[in-house]
Image (tube, rainbow, N blue to C red; front, side, top):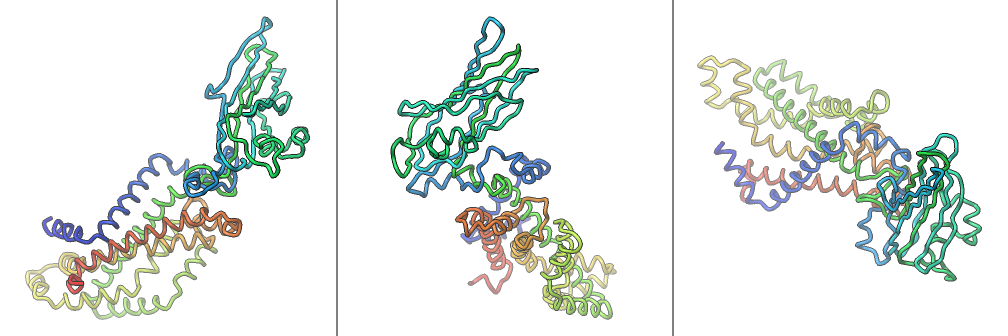
Length: 446
């Protein structure tokens, strides 16, 4: 424990190591938060749900924090629902029919128009559906009749698809005509307090109607949305534990197995060492990435299959010759001869005397290897060969590439996962280089 404490105190002398540790700790906390708040099944449901789940989200909307960096304040999404008791009053006549008034106040302070407007109705009735009348009140006192119709049990009213409303607005689309200053060309948003008033009439006892008004803005959420209205926050959050788990398991499986195989080859020597070296030399000339691509294409894209193939192909890599060179020196040490003299078994010598001497070399290499495997998983996903189920950073970039995000100006779609990949790689690289200085005496003075 004292040696471990000394190493940790030595590590804290390097500012790069401290920064790396802080970032890694943040990524681990974020991973734990994600796994607790968004369980695996829920994450899959959200990511594969599409517009059925994300109907309240606009398509291809940037994150809301964009407004902190732009001169013009872009429109943000707003969701108003009477199911939560917002602005809903009910009165009853002598015949038991209800008059329901739903009032949605809207404080519009943006410099651009929204992308779309929709009202989602849900009603309860037996035979006679409720009738609704919708009116739009502007800050300058104008009243615009939007529509009058009977509503089904579930019904979506998209204002842009109502031809009567379009004619009433002089041919302007509702998202502009309802928010624009009158008699101004080109149209400019009128800022202030708006109100959407829905007056409903029911014709049966216990009949009811509710409404949800969605103003689809140019910005939505912390990370924005994609072409399927999905909130990218889900994939960015879930990509963190997936990336860290893949990188850590691949690095651990590769380095520990490689070290043990090299130790066995050196200790037993002869044909055992020859077979290990020949397999290593053959494996070094095999194309690593094309093999992974073939496995993903013709066998399975499961992340666990890819992880297993990655470990198998990486075991007999160049590191096995490095470990072998160190083990050949350690094998001739006096304490190894002493262990032989008192009758220690081969396994005890390998695991208790040979391999512990290489741990100082193993730890920095293990830490540095983690981001390389994180980038490998992301690269396969970007090529369309990643796990089709899991939401990951690479999958976000792949979807962005397939839908021309960069050509259409949706830079956030690519930059957000790319930034997380860079931050992860930088954190492990800074920590790994600091560990290498601590455990490698020749680098301590640098």
